[in-house]
Image 1 (cartoon, each protein chain N blue to C red):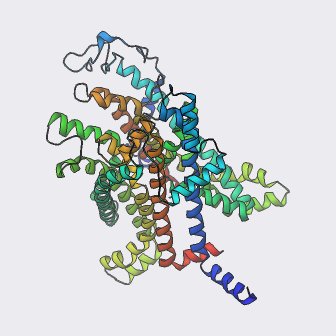
Image 2: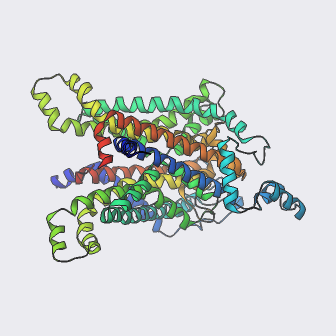
Image 3: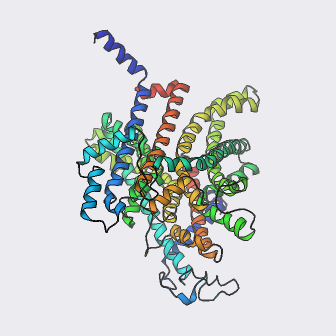
Length: 274
Length: 322
């Protein structure tokens, strides 16, 4: 028991509880249809406040839509996009990183140049450039987030693959006649997956903030889809009269990124990589 | 050219290859940014329709297309666009019918006056807090700084900004929620930016210094009885400086584009909010010019940092040659 708490400190357990809680919440059937407008029920405050109603636990927004349902739907989409974006980025990065390590010379030069270029352009700038001529959709946002994050994985995979290729096990498999691709996918990739997963955990909160910033500016997820950033962006106008429309999704974003950062730090410290 | 001079040039190139590679990369990045910005305008729909409206007569459309060269092949258009760019001509705003350069110039000051103090406070504060935390590693003060910086790091800029407005403008009514007329207008935007960015530098400095303090060479200095303060200022901090320089470079380069969110939240009349406004109004000449400006500012800062690196640390220069 003591050992369990040393390996899993309270802050880590707190973070995991939050994340698991939000994920479960997002899978419960919604109490109301998230986009259903009831114009007579506009701006109802949360239940615990004066004038709140029991059926709208977190109140309603400017069109009488239930905030709890909208937040739950928002969690579902925002989490999924952040996850998908991280995975797409990792896949592109691992692929290109392997190619750079496998072929070296000018392939390596070219990919590392792309890495440098990518690293120097901030996500929000690439996203705005792209979204001004491709109309925003679910898939476009996922790809954008993936493209924004691939460069770290490419760097990592390239470096780790280059060192692994000289290790005894890789040389032994090579001597046995395995192809480079087989060595990489069957032997090297499983060995470096730990470091890659730690990196994905560390990048997760950044991906989530990137998505919500974009949706906050109205460039990300478009209605009828709901994301947490979009809820916050829309609710901001009514801050004076109905703060809960903004603060509820904002608090969910904050708690999520905080929890993910804690988990990421924990994974990094545990694995001893930096 | 004689054989000797060719050899001389090759030798010169070899010697400074690190700098050449960096300059070529910067130029390629700049070119990519220009190509993207060019196609951004072209594929965002027919500019004639945007400019003249959907009810324009075919004659008017034809005249417009001819006047702006839209009826010529794409490659011609790009070369003339490139030529105009080299002369500093950015065109006119579609909506405000004023030169783009003039509009950008009128908003640049507001962005710089906010972002420069924010950068100084974030980098300076982050390095100081990170150093304090590393010196007190695994003590309560370190824990406190770590918790606060993790909170600041996870709190998205836009949400913190909105919270500040809610508390200080709506509930308490102490501070103005928009504009940049006086000192009081700077307090909330600065707080929002510095909280997030200072946390990044704090976490980074702390991690770098903790690593360095763990290493053998610091242990041997300690065993020689050299004072902690001397070790910190003459050994540990200079060693952390290189990696701090990298992220500072990325950070300073992206400051202007980082202003997009904060300026939108606080209705700050700078370049970031100009970009969002123009994007909503489909005023593409302004969007294009701002993308170029933001992109180039990043390319230039990164190049400066890379060159500084090569000058400061010959090992990095060597690495490029191998």
